[in-house]
Amino acid sequence: MSETARGSEKITDDTTAHWKRLDVRHHLNPQMNYHQLKEVEGGSRIITDASGVWLTDSEGEKILDGMAGLWAVNIGYGRDDFARVAAEQMNRLAYYNSFFKTTTPPTVELAAKLAEIAPGDCNRVFFGSSGSESNDTFVRMARFYWSIQGQKKRVNFITREMAYHGSTQTGASLGGLGILHEHFGLPLPNFHHVMPPYGFNFKRAGESDEEFGLRAARAVEEKILELGSDTVAAFLGEPVIGAGGVLIPPDNYWPEVQRICREYGILFGADEVITGFGRLGRWFGCQRWGLEPDMITMAKGISSGYLPLSGLMVSDKVARVMIDSGEDFYHGYTYSGHPVACAVGLANVEAMAREKVIETFDRDIAPYFRERLIGEFADHPLVGEVRVIGGLSAVEMVADKATGKRFEKTGSVGTLCRDHCMRLGVISRGIRDAMILCPPLVISRDEVDEMVRRLRLAVDLTAKEVL
Image (cartoon, rainbow, N blue to C red):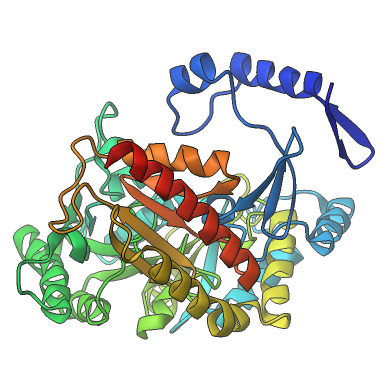
């Protein structure tokens, strides 16, 4: 019987089998084919430990986490200082709510710190526990903002096809992924989607990046005019569409979208759930294009995934209207501003600043990450395009490299390659037929080399089966 140490605890084959039995009998994973996982594969892989960019499963296997958990663990695993902060706050005040005209010290201290690093005049924050909650709050607050000004017709929201904004009814409606709409009666009314800035899929023959960027941006304007600008509450977009496949816009796209929103007087929102807290080499991804949104949704990297925490940053323009109206904003969550989550979030932001995590990554690692991926895959016969920006990348696999022809069954090759990655000890997410990497920002050059090496092996094995 094999065994592996986990602190003072010994995990045996029997322990793993016990956890797998519990998983099969009682646990429903998110976004999962339950028959495949529970009945065919016999349950989930059990992750027990982590440090830096490495995970360890219950059988003692080391896995290089190329997805930062779920786009979240920007500062890496195993921070003892965060554990101490959480324990100290739990011993002092484990929980109290932000209703009843009360709050807690970590809540307001983190709010002030976020105001320091946010772009423009986003100086206030409404806390939640997940990106889905923050995007729900965005919708509620945008409608409230217009309603209290007597503009009750402004109920429409514009987002992009292939974008992901959460898994609640509202979040999934904001998103433009059909797999989140089918079977659920979604999207809800008043949620509208336009083409994404996905050049590999939507560029016309002979069209330059700049021409495509303007055309994709003006799809937003066309939708505003179609709906009537006086009916549109807001536009919301991720600086780089993440869970839709790491779709990187041309540089002229975002300035034009912001200009359009300003021209037609609609609110401009940035979904920074994935791109925030260093992922694009800035505190917020929208800063890469000099944008100043009216509201910013965030989660994941705000605490580096150590505790559930999210927020909606709100500009002075929006906050002042709500404050001056004297109206009650009837919206909130039990765990809005949770003191332990906020204490850890504050420790995370302060550590990232003190240790210069973002600057070091942007200067030393991001260029190397880009160089290694493009150098390794640009000429691969299975790869149609390699997209890299900051700490986000996609290696897009195609049936015919010369023409860009896709595989007949979208997602089948991505799933095959993802499974090869898991067997090779690297986590890379398959989105459609693109392999995605989003490692912790503390990854070293040697670990980048190892991550790319393992992904290359997985792509080679996949090519042998499908080409």
